[in-house]
Picture 1 (cartoon, rainbow, N blue to C red):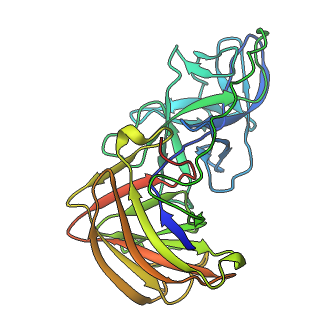
Picture 2 (picture 1 turned 180 degrees about the horizontal axis):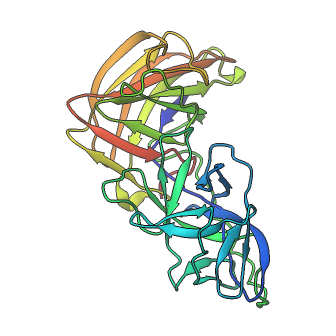
Length: 317
């Protein structure tokens, strides 16, 4: 039997939510992306609201005018000109936040928010408009954990669709990467740790770590790369520019949370350049499965290719 593990390009973004109602009421926030995945919103000490990065959940309170303050009493605003959602010392809270029956948060009737990478510990900032020129932003919905108005109970959700055994083009068991570490030559001594985002461009490569089950003993593994077309994606999207040329390589050792661009493991085997296009699937290499162990690979840019995506476990449509 051929066991397969691969780098897929299906995405899901998520954040925790906000809600508004008459009177003062306090809550935590979650953020939800297109795939329905939720993540809590935490705060830096300066009041920036962020998703991911392991920050503890922040607390917020809302008044009758729809103004929000955080647990430290700072007014929450959309900082001009970027519209970043943050809470500042001495700031008057921006009025106009509201909460629907399903917990969806809106600002003056707009319920669209965006999360964008900061380059700091895998954390994302929150905006109502993605900053001009910023890559890797995804639309999200903010929801509150409490303070919901009295509304009829929602109908039960429909049963989930029958999951696919494998993404398109795969047969047999397969593994997704369990760790992604983007490393940039512009910050060669920074250890960014594991990220949900793969980032590949002329200054950045991404390392992929796979955990191979013991049951794969004696099997042959194949490294596969899939780039679905946009119409085949239900919960995600990606951005690719340039020729699509990517260089795949097997690493001599497995990276850790302390891995930087300067101390990353050396290359054991360079599989060369593969040019990828939307809708394509590519078999990069085959080898004996390292059963019960980890194995790691690096994908880097060739010829100016840039690729940014969110690694999702959901298969294409």
